[in-house]
Image 1 (spheres, rainbow, N blue to C red):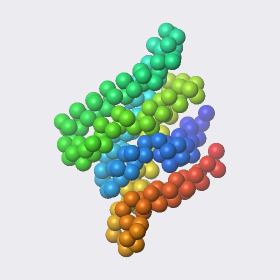
Image 2: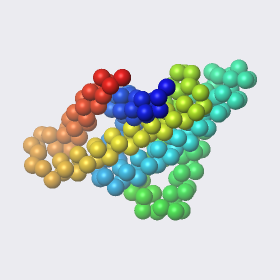
Image 3: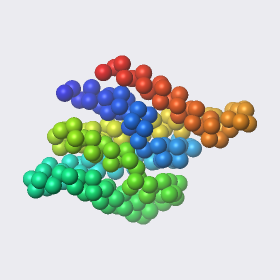
Length: 190
C-alpha cells in the first residue's frame, strides 16, 4: 500500500476524533488554546506511536503464539497505562509548564479510547507490526491536527459576539459538528 495513501487514510479520511468519534474528552477539554492543544497533540502522537509499537509487538509475539489473543484488550490497557505514566513523569520533570497546562487531561490519555481503539482496530485489520506503528502515528497526527484546528477556532470564537444562548458549550459543539462535517468530505479521497 502506498504510504501517502495510508497516511491520508489514517489522518484525514478515518480521523480518529471527527470521523470515528474516539477521544472526544481531551478534544473538547484541552482545545481552549492552541499552545495547550499542540502540547496535548504532541503527547498523543508520542503515546499512540509507542502504544502501537508495544501493543502490536505484544499481540504478534506473545498473545498470538500463546493462543490468548482474547486477552488483547486487557493487555493493551495495561501497556497504554504504563506508557502514559512514563510520559507524565517525563513531562513533570522536564516540561513543567506543559505538564501543568495539560492538568487532568494528561492522565486521561490512559483512558483515551482513541489510543486503545486504534491499537485494537489495527490488529483486527490484520496489519503487520510496521503497519500498526504507521497507523498509530498517522492516526495520532490526525488527532493532533484536528485538536489544533479546533483550538484555533475556539480562540477565535472567544473574541466574537455570540448570542447568549449559544455561548460556552453550545457554540463549542456546533463548531465540532461543523469540523466533523468538513472532515467527512475527505471520505471522497479514498
